Structure formats: C-alpha cells, structure tokens
Amino acid sequence: SSISQFLLLAFADRWELQLLHFWLFLGIFLAALLSNGLIITTIACDYHLHTPMYFFLLNLSLLDLGSISTTLPKAIGNSSGTTR
Image (cartoon, rainbow, N blue to C red; front, side, top):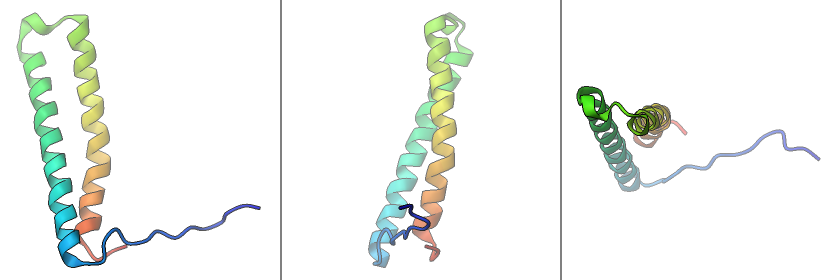
C-alpha cells in the first residue's frame, strides 16, 4: 500500500497562540541573524582570524544563516496569516 495524500493540521487554532508563535519564531530568527552576522563580521574584519579553524567557522555560520533564512520566515508567515 502507498500513501497518496496527507493532512496538515493547524499549528494553533486560537489567535493568542498564533500570536505567541509569531513572536517566538521572530525572536529566534532575529537572534540567529544577529549572532551569525556578528560571527561573519568579526572573522571578515580581523586579520588574525584568517586561519583554517575560523574559515570553517565562517562557512558554518553562512550555512546556518542560509538554512534559517529559508525555514523561519515561512513559519512566521504561516503563523501570522490565515493560510493553512
């Protein structure tokens, strides 16, 4: 047997919970943007941090920034809107 469709249920039906999820996701998103931006700026501006360890830390920070920039804005939009 195979599954041809699935049903996604609402994350929260009450407006207060949707608003709480919106602010929680927004806070997580802004904290991740700020922390990764600080890491990228610090490594890029300080010449003494141009070593292989910090190169990989810079790549990890860029990867985290890219992955969180695709998922959390969609979650924020879904929790604030009426779309399901």
